[in-house]
Length: 369
Image (cartoon, rainbow, N blue to C red):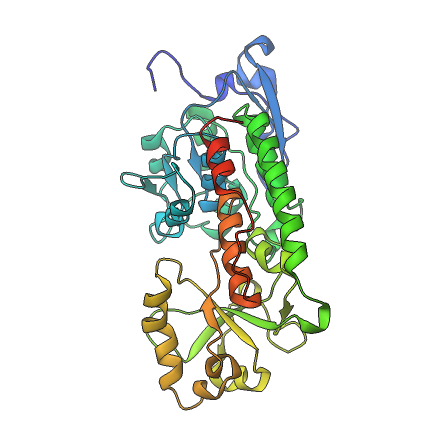
C-alpha cells in the first residue's frame, strides 16, 4: 500500500452503528474530520451499521475462512490475515481449475488470544471481522477502546459472525445467510456482477441438490461432532443449526440425530458426549469436524481405525457400516460450500455425479463472467 494514501477513520464514514457496547464507534462527519464528498459509497452491515469508503479496499483482513473464501470468489487477493490459517482450508480450491491460494505469510490473528498490535502490522484497508467476536470472546486481550483505536488509526471493521448461531452476545443483531453476507462484501469490493454470477451458479446448484435428496423417510440421521486430539472417548456435539457452517447439511435435508435427545450444542454448553451416549442414540452416520486437513485415507487411519478398535464404538451402526466421515469445515464461503456440499452428497446419499460446473466457477473468479 502506497504511503500517500491512508485508510483511517478520517476518511471513512460510519453512521448508525449498532456495535454492542461500543456506542462511541457510531461516528458522524464532524468526529471524522473529513468532508462528505470524500466518501464514494457506503455499505451497511449488522452490527457495525453504515460504513463509507473513499475507494475500493486493496488490502484486507478476514475473520475466518468463510469471509476469506468470499473475497477469493470476488477476485480479490488473499487476506493479509485470518483468525486461524489452519482452518482456512485452501485445498478445496484444488477442485477448481486455475484457482489457488498461498497462505504463506498470512498472519494468524489468534495466538491464545488476540494482540491488537497485529492489526497495525497488517495495515489492512478494511477488517472483515465482527468486532463483537473479538471483544466478547477475547475480552482479556482486546477491548472496545482497542477496536475504536484500530478504526481511528487504520481502517473500519465490517463483519458479522455468521458461522454459528450459538453465541449469546449475537442475540442483539441479525445473522446473515451465506449469500446475504457475500452480497455485502461484494458491495465493499464493488464486485456485484461477480456476486450475481455466483448467485446464478448457486441457484442451479441448489436445483441439482434438490433433485438428489430422497423422500423424508429415507433421509439418514447424522451426528455431527468435533474429534479432539488424543483420547477418542469424548466428543464435542454440534446440533445442525442456522449458521453457515451447517449449510450443506440443511440443504441436503438430513435428520439431526441429536435434535430430539438431551444432548445440547457445544457452542452454548461446552459439553461432550461419550461412546455410551452415542450408542444409546446410535446415529446412522457420524460426521467429525476438525479433520479437514486430512485426506480420506488419513482420516480413516487416524480416526475411524480408533473407533473400530474400541469395544463400545465398534458396536455403533455407523462404524459397522463404514459410515464415519469428515464432517466439513466450521467456515465456508461460496466456493467452499459448493465443494463440501457435493462431497457430503456422496457421503450420505452415494451421489457420484458432479453437481456444479467447476469451469464456470473458475471463469467467474478469474473475471470471465
